[in-house]
Amino acid sequence: MNAKLVSFEDGKAFLLYEDGTIKIAEQCLDPEVVIVRELTTEKIREYSGRGIKIFPCVQDEEQCLSILLNKIFPQCKSCKFS
Image 1: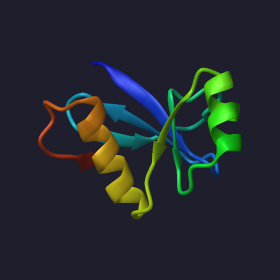
Image 2 (image 1 turned 180 degrees about the horizontal axis):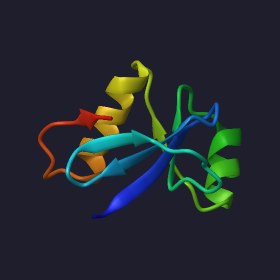
Image 3 (image 1 turned 45 degrees about the horizontal axis):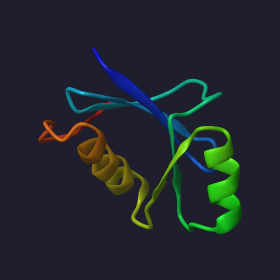
């Protein structure tokens, strides 16, 4: 099953699966996407320089993860937090 490793700026990491499942990741060394509350030039330079995509989101954690899941896997219609 295809999964993407994403994290928030504070380091809290999650695995997003194509079936809509979202799981907390034990460790996040190199996320594919970082969710940021505020997009700045410094953050763009830092993350893009490391090859990490940036997803700005000001909603709560669950909403941000759900929105991102639907952007990454548009075929997924519902999220399942576990």
